[in-house]
Amino acid sequence: MMRIARWLAVLSLALAPLARAAPQTAQVGQLAPEFSALDETGARHSLSEYRGKIVVLEWTNPECPYVARHYAHDTMETLAKRYGARGVVWLAVNSTHTNRPADTLRWKQEQGFAYPTLQDSSGEIGKLYGARNTPHMFVIDAQGELRYSGAIDDDPRGRSAQPHNFVDAALSALLSGGAPDPTTTQPYGCSVKYR
Image (spheres, helix red, strand yellow):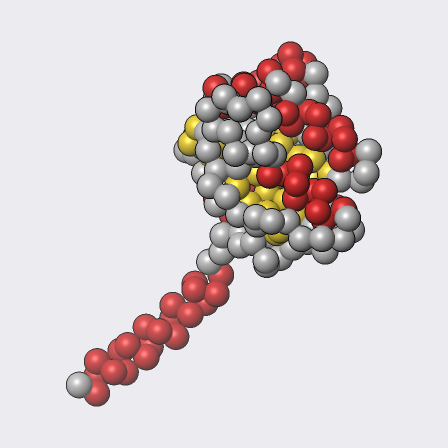
């Protein structure tokens, strides 16, 4: 019995560094996990460089019909322009394992949007944030805290004439000194195509 107890104690000590080193998935109300990645032009972006600004992370995949619908209606582009004028940083993230920078450049040219798309073909950032769908949206406040995670709006089928846009509401609340409500919603769309 004593041998088993000693063996378990040694095993616990050996595994402790692994448990501490394991990355945790982003949680609303906590500091957003740091990341660093290249965009489609080769420029590096890290979350820490945007400290002091609100940051929106938009998980995307141009081959997803939900993403295509939102881009056809300029959902993301309109919000990025409106809030970009107020200092909000908008970053798309493509965690599709087959995506290449040239694919993103071509898509940006077709769609005509200006914000960067981080290239995450390894899925590292997507898994760090727990991104499940395209689109899956995250709003980080100026202090680096994750304040919203979920769907872009309450209209997964695209049938509403006036959907409630959760990201618009979250950004508006934060910029006026308030808090997003709700802070989480169920994201909808295509699954992220991780490797």
